[in-house]
Length: 373
Image (cartoon, rainbow, N blue to C red; front, side, top):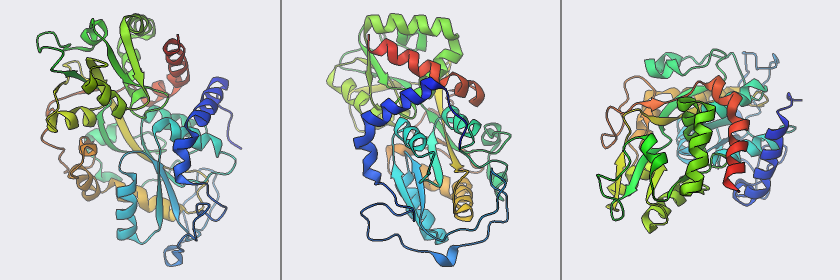
């Protein structure tokens, strides 16, 4: 049995589950054999089953079942699941969730976890899972040295998760048909003081949105950040479930300026839409993408192989080279290069994982209370 989370977190996550169950149901419920309910059968890769000679977080030794392992996460999960199976022979099924959906699903399954590995944005949220014994700790991948110096700086001491990439949870994007370049906000102070309607994604739903909001709380301090948000709600702040709808609202004129995830913002600009992008000099809130292993996985060898696959420079470069706006991120393996269309010298505002984890329930709850007023 896991350690109990804070009461507020349980209440919030229960609400998320109810609100988002329709979205999360696309992954399908799984039976005890690891196959999704309704599927004919999960392919058995018994040739890949291997003895796990490392201790898991609970200290027990286990042996892989050889069955399909399940990856929960957001960007890239379908792509990496297919490539991982091609390269290693391990069978993997990806279940695509938004950040809030994935966390709610993991909470709901804590008595009978159906996932083996997690890959998602938001190191604070993943740190919280580690602190409550959801994640395997203490295992060191053989290719951990593949991380760049920046990547190593994000690595937790307990090795509960592994940095894969980082991107801007929000840059300033504005509709050029509605806002002139001289009136467009250039800093986050300007964004919060802008006289027209602005918007961004919901930190309880979109994986990059909590890193966005928490970066402002870390940058200005709790009281100043609350004061800025309170006034911004009064002056017109629209909150959308995810960044896609934020971009649509920007194009429609429902909002004039957005704190928009970078791949959405640059995607609109490169598509020829009337959108300009500003990377503030003080930095853009960073969203760290990490991979982690369930402490209760029945397939530790396959799960560990997945982490090592994601740490490979070749894997990260493949993702950065995809013909997709999702490829707007900074790979964290040595020798990789990001897309040239991005801001080459942009810096990130990234609170420590411990701080972001400790503040998550309070910040999300406070934000939700302001949003419904």
